[in-house]
Image (cartoon, rainbow, N blue to C red; front, top):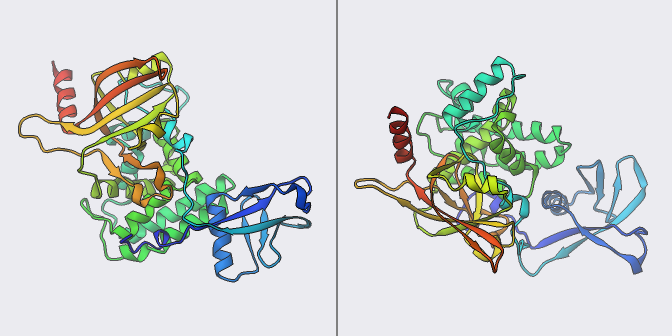
Length: 380
């Protein structure tokens, strides 16, 4: 893989396990459980650095010298651990349900307003609606006319990840993620954050890869994207930098080959009707797969999305996202990531009785055409 991003050069042909058996020292009753992706990386780092021990979230100590795990302050209750060398890189054979099947948020003409919100929050959410996403608010308030370099933004992204992770009792995971960003921070030292600044591949590839990892980070970013009224000014500061780099870099590496992607959903009849309107806007990052069979494993509804944009005479095609499979920690998911603020046209709806699924066909359209048509409809 041609990249200078250290996180993408790491070998993934190993897996660490801990023995979860009621009697952890019984050879007959071994029950080996995988450590999570980031715990696996933290332990492997310690192993490669010849460290005696490392700590992971949950207040656990991993004693690498004696190959045991125990709670900090209670070293008498130990469980054995082991490292297994794999024949090939570990990868998921199936799509992750939470990543590929949660509801897709759509822009609507009316949104529920909480009468208890204060004026400051009301202004913030109006701005998010106007600008499209909270990372744009971060750019207006914390980048524009402030003389920051891209390295400064990377540092703020790392700081924000640590703060958000610590609040979720995921400090060790957050610090490992932040370290991956800081390892490429220097590539942004001489890049001014003007309106059209470009992101070096070393930084952009790292951010995309971090977004694909099974961590709190992509879940939190997506949660605030789906529920924009949950965004606070603090969220803008902590997650805005990471979100901004990801959104901008997806524009830089947008895929210009046209194909069809898929996403399985569980929808009520009312929710399904929202996709059967003339034009749709996706208001958060949306993970889809190029593999239809894998997407069909989820839900009662399959979105079939044609990425070739519908054009009028003289239009230049606008592309809606990027094929990020080569940057993913889960290559087999064949992920195509649709950017925030992209537009689609409803084509048709079918019900497949054999599959017992609703099929909703969408087609990419140029956002500028959508906005122009929306403006004219409002004027008429």
